[in-house]
Image (tube, rainbow, N blue to C red; front, side, top):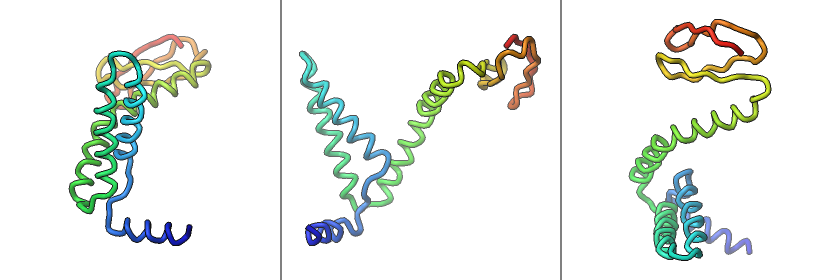
Length: 134
C-alpha cells in the first residue's frame, strides 16, 4: 500500500493539483449527474461528466499559469455570491439581537443592535445619516 502511495505521489510531482475551482467543478458535476436521473433531465449527465473531466484535467495539468488564471477568474466570479450567502447566514443567526439596514446612498449593509429605540445610524462608507427604529 505504501508503495502505491509513493508511486502516486511521484506521478503528481510537477502537476497543478486540486484547488477551490476544481472542487467546485467536481461537486457541480456530481450534482448534475444526480439530477440526470429525473425524467427529461438526462442531458445533465453529459454536462456533469464534462465538468468532472475538466476538473480532472486541471488536477493533472502541468501548466501552472493557465490554471492560476482560471482560478483567479473563478474567485472573482464567486466573490459576490459567497458574500451574499454569508450575509444571509449572519442575518438568520443574529435575527434576535441585531437588525440590518441598507444605506440609501451607497447600498452598504448596516448592522445595528435591536431594542435601542430610534437611533441615528451613520454609514461608515459614505457618512450618510439616517434615523431608524430598532
